[in-house]
Structure formats: structure tokens, C-alpha cells
Length: 193
Image (cartoon, rainbow, N blue to C red; front, side):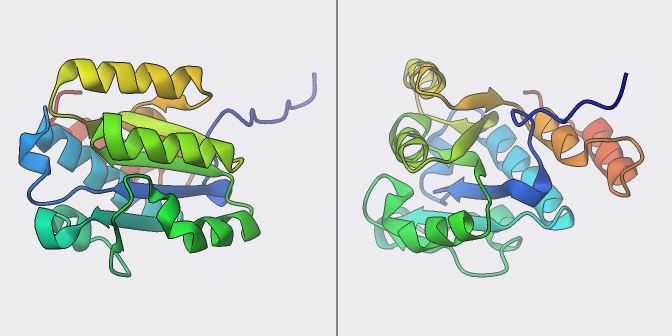
């Protein structure tokens, strides 16, 4: 049997982008599993850089909610985009660029799952993007809000995934030049999902 095509339901670094939604100083401490969310976001940002996956971060009203946490800002090549709308659709120039670059897969992480992440994912789906929501890199203050948000996103067409799944899908193969480093980072994780 000849090789089968790779499923379009798997992440591909050549068609992916990473969107980091509002991981800010005044919001993050309020979120359940905040340190795990922060660490998983950082790990995904590191991997995205290695796989040449574009990264964009947003900040919801930073004058009131503070800037992005250091774990995010130190990994950005350009400043986070400020917004007032809960959805990131306010940052439509970025999404236009991703469309033009054929980056149809958007990996979404951040907070809060039931407000800015949910509204962003629903808008991205409406724009024709495939959304991959990394559940262990998203969070809310309350577990019920988070769970219902994940359910709404999934039934609306988003794909729920985890940090490790995303990393190994970007890698795709144990022969990939980044595999050993990704594997070592995964083994070194001390954060429970």
C-alpha cells in the first residue's frame, strides 16, 4: 500500500499560527491552574518559534488589566496587540495576513476560556479558520465556565487538544530535527495537565 496523505485534522507547522489570548498580569492569577496554563503557553510559544509558526499575542485593555505576563512577553518578536473587544476579531489585519499566507490552522491558547477565547474561536471559525484549542493552555476562574466554553467551541467545530498533542503533531515524525528537543521538554514537564 502506498503512503496515505496526512490528515488535515492534524496540525502542520507550515499551515499553523499560534494565537495567545490575554495572558495578562492581573488576569492570570485568578485563573484555575494558572501556573500550568502559563507554563504550557510558554512551551507552545517556544515550540512555535522552533517550527517557524507565527505567534501573535493580544492584551485586553492593558491599561486596566496590565500587560502580558513575562513568560509571554519575553517570547514575542513584536508587542502584543491591544484590544477592547472581547473577541480578537478586532485584530483583523493579522487574520488577513494568515489567510494570505495560507495559515488556516489557528492554535488558540489563553484566558479566559469562556469570554475572550470562546468569542475569538467562534469568530475565527466563521472566518474559515480551523481552530485548535489547547485545553491545558486555556483557563477560566471557574471550572463550570471553562467546561461549558470548551463544549461550545467543540460543538461549533473547534478541535480540542493538549499541549503535548500539539507539539508532537507539529513535529510529525521522530526523525524531525526538533524531535529530540521537543521530547526532552515534554519529559521534563512537571506541570500536571
